[in-house]
Amino acid sequence: MPLARDNPAPADSPDGLSQWYARVRARSLELCAPLAPEDTVVQSMPDASPTKWHLAHTSWFFERFVLGRGAEGPEPLHPEWHFLFNSYYQSAGPMHSRDARGLLTRPTLAEICTYRAQIDEAVRERLARGIAPTLAAVLTLGLHHEQQHQELMLTDLKHLFACNPLQPAYTTARAARSPAAGPMRFLTGRTGITATGYDGAQFAYDNELPRHSELLHPHAIAHRPVTNAEYAEFIRAGGYRTALLWMSEGWATVQREGWARPLYWAEDLVSAYTLGGTRELDPNAPVCHVSYFEADAFARWAGARLPLEAEWETLAAPLDPTHGQFADDGLFEPQADPHPQHEGPRQLFGDVWEWTGSPYVGYPGFKPLPGALGEYNGKFMCGQWVLRGGSCATPRGHVRASYRNFFYPRDRWQFSGIRLARDLP
Image (cartoon, rainbow, N blue to C red; front, top):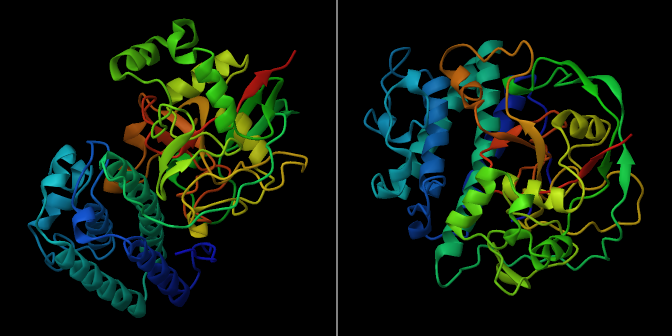
């Protein structure tokens, strides 16, 4: 299952774009190779979607926004499916309830795979005839959108399999244990006015724009993420029983949900469910599957805070965003730093998404994309928090320093972890 290929930048020729399209689309099916058809149908919670639905929705996206079927082109292949596989594009029409996607036993997985193949053939023919730059930009957006769903396929499957008493394994891949993480060091960050947001000529989402100025106050950021061993110390010290460490809503969530440890951890704090089945926790690997509430409480317990997204981005901007442990490596589990003795920031990209202390809002001068695609990011800028850096389930080459992920503060089924920051005098 490991793939040793980086995502190219958006292609500047029809042939290059066609090849990239084929690779991304094939990767979605490769991720389904270990699954039985039954695995692709079930929905384990309202926030997750069945694998079968992901495969159909990403194909619907290309049919609706690239091929322009319906009002702007030929009739859809399956008009009745439009309702089933529209996600949240209100301007594109009504949609099936998100929390009932697991009830869609029909169309079958085989029918959806046929639908994918038909859409792929139509897109290849469209590319062969030549497309305008504006449509090529929409196709590029669709490929990044599919990569996001590839990550969701993995995170949703993990939650689904963890709910099964048999706790089946998705993969048998396993990495060797790494050296001890060593003491956490804090790196002094840049201060003063600095520019953040995407600054390049390739693809970026609208929520990464426009590039703008931020005032950074004196601060320091940890050189590595918080480890499983460090988080276990927080648990043993009574972190989940100490109300003063928690945001009010976070404490209410802990009480209501009975949280006492990260998602998937066993009560003994020694093992956890992974996509490779239940395994012993690596004490030196980054802790993951924690909510913003848990990350914030841990930071307060540690005498620190979460980094602001501008602080995080400024630290990460000089680094290569493809250097890290991503889904292409086929492990699907955060790994300890193999070179903990190296100076400078470590593991900013890959392994775990890192919660920041910044709410998800638009940058000064933010403008969403025109039309239905403007619903992609902008309308979610309410009540969510920003995460940075990608994870072990993210395709390599998908993220960059300016990439903004966002989830609600209670969410923890994603591969989300913690990096600490501190204010300096």
